[in-house]
Length: 248
Image 1 (tube, rainbow, N blue to C red):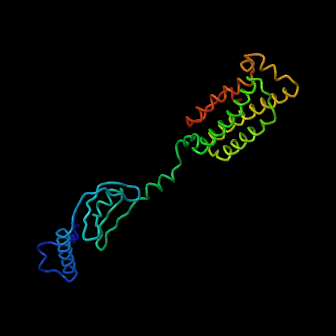
Image 2 (cartoon, one colour):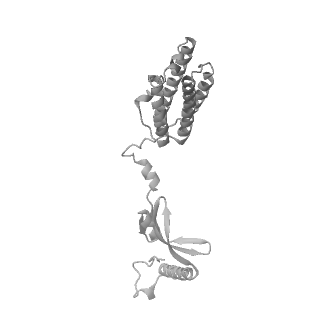
């Protein structure tokens, strides 16, 4: 632990026997400081420890006496890049502004990177995709096996719509909003395909799907729905937005 030189510049050995009252007080102060420092060093424990002050970090000599810690004022000035000056009657320590405040006051040179999907949106988006996939798969099974496509599809529609609504509420980043648009497009395509099949059943045209083995393979809307679904799942899991023509 450093001790500061508080001896007046005009004091000398030659004049030590002719000290005035003020010099005697200064001498007494120095003696007391030396005595306190000696006692503190004897009783305390000194260690070099990392010290963090207003965002500035460095090593400082810490003196621990009982339950109190003391640090060299010169170390404070060095770590914080502050200024330290000694006057006749006082010591002046000037500290700079905290690093966090200084950084906040300066405009950013580059705009922050656009965040990807939020975790809440990914979770809700995957649930919405699962509901739409169940809706689409049920329709495909009915078609392949020649079963009538009835009004029961409305329940699948409602579940998928509820999941899409939850995904919309969870969308909070620009990527979320872009992903939500693709999910909405997929929902609209599945809904259109389902409505077309119900209308075909009412006009007795749905049987054509069961008669031809590759009827679904030749259905452009169904193939578009499948390709978009295959794209959206991995895209959501990746956490970053991408685009695909199949989802438009």
